[in-house]
Image (cartoon, rainbow, N blue to C red; front, side):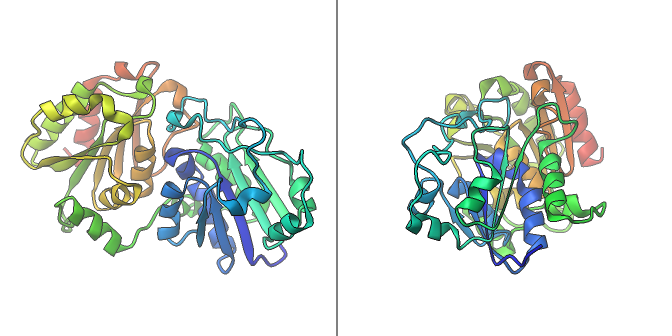
Length: 347
């Protein structure tokens, strides 16, 4: 490959969407370690990859610097946000793209020429322009992986394999697992824990984080079941944190009416950096088909994930993950999750 000094990377969608592309983005970093990588996406989530040293710069789709590519004159492009995946709430987050329908001036084309490579990962084939369009605008090489409906494995592996093939790299057995990890600075983790009144765990310490929410209500296991698991964990002496966000506003009042056992706290509406630090500073996690579940897996926690069958295998999290699924998520038996937790804790 011709030496690459600057590359621009694209990933549309929410936290879960970004993280299924994490192994592919990390592979790009490994293959061109000296290049400056600009990631275009949701800044509040993409910043996690910058903090981990995987990309050098984060840019929003509506940043003026992206005006050479994206315009708001057309209609929204469906990039796969309307699906049963982790970020169903992001249906309106897709950018507007002119698909080359307008003329691009010389000054605009010149701004694209600063990049030697454009890469992107999309949930399904769309009106995203072909590689030839990018080359005409001055980018030397371009590659976009469109997830194929009916692919046999998780989307994360699909994107990773297509990126590896484009980069003409070998496939050591451990490469995917290494690229799927989001390694955060120890200071960041300690600051996040301190903001929540928690201490770093010792060598034998354990902490469980529970996230009972998801952007789509059909993907939520019943709250009473999560509360029962928290009681079970507390009975075993396991401390933890119940985490909720804006998407769970409808269950906040019920949570606040419920007394948590000793050693447990409730944290609401944390920013992505604090959630990541909490997860990286914890050992176990329980959640639904959601962005935080993918983040827990990327941070190395032992994950129990409750999924509807329709989300699999595409949205299966990587890492140390035990996924339980049924056609309707509320049908996942409480006893099955109890047993998974016991197994995870080494009962």
